[in-house]
Length: 140
Image 1 (cartoon, rainbow, N blue to C red):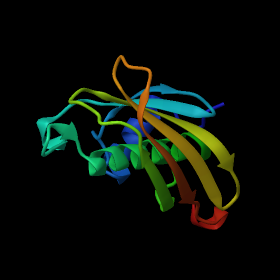
Image 2 (cartoon, rainbow, N blue to C red):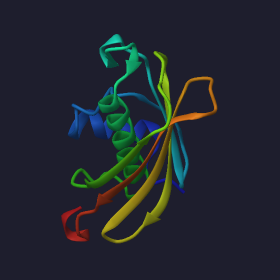
Image 3 (cartoon, one colour):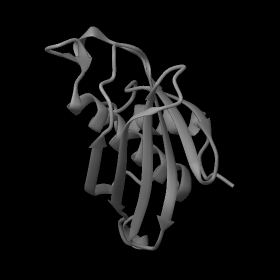
């Protein structure tokens, strides 16, 4: 059972991590995965009219962080330790959908797999594996 709901995430981010609040919309939360949408913005485009790599990486990292929060609760000090991204195809301008799935949740590390696709298209444009370090129990 998830430790945080979509509403809990929203309140936590607004209060403790305002720079992440509003980066995308969490649409679904479950124990082992979340789904979020990043609405299209012309600011995310790179030359050539495709969505930029940094935008895709930020979405993957954000989705993984939100998945960690859903699984361990409101832990502001969880930090990214690695993000391995594979760009699979050129994403044309559209909303992006990220589905983050839990691969491992240990006492000190959480690992998630994130697939990113364009809204309405099943084939992913990017795939990431993200690892988060969790603070010791006393620091949570």
